[in-house]
Image (cartoon, rainbow, N blue to C red; front, side, top):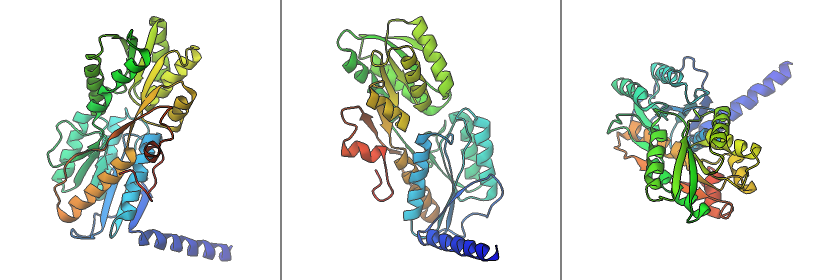
Length: 344
């Protein structure tokens, strides 16, 4: 036992040294106490960041984590990332408490996606008052401080393309369309709704006949889609605005025996969503670049903390993915990013 313990200790030390050589330490946070902030500003000064998604357990946010870790590993000097999140995007209070805990632990910066634009503004305000740098990814706050950049998809512009996609599938005759948003009060939800409805104005052949929220929950999305299909037996198309909504809607359409008959346009690109595209259940996906959100957001926070740089918000882009372009090199770089060749 003593020999085994010694070997294990040696391996752990070696692993720690290898990670330190990359200039990064990436830890899963348990929400407890920790070290204070970085040891000083300036070029290559140590930096400690908390990177917090809307929720853990979704492929989209996992890609954000990989992007943030990649940026930390490529950075000069020591960049220490703590990754943690609530388990449901509707747990606004949980996210508030988690972020406040990180502030109290003395992190140098927060890189986070706001679950509620108005509520989380107070967290940003509190952090800034305590000299903690804030960068938003995916979703900002309301109001958005001018010195807090947002690295996110232009959700309005991307969602505005969705009615075009539906129209291409249905043809000149158009048809009945249902919309499944995901969480009222979230800036991304409101932006996608704005873009989608703006796009609909250009397509009088498309009639919006139903709108029900999935509340970012697969089972809820399944239920509301079943209800929509019952109330609208002639439904032609569905736009579901995030991953749980897409998967729940697709399953409801499958169970109704209408896979391939009802056009589904979705958002994001989990493996299950890609499978739906391959099977022809999902016609197209509006795919964001979560890896780039994590990567660029982390780099921005490090630059601000070390040099006081003024960083502007950035549109991290979106890609339309269909069965026809699924194997294209550019599409694959977004769907399967790597730190060796990041899609940034």
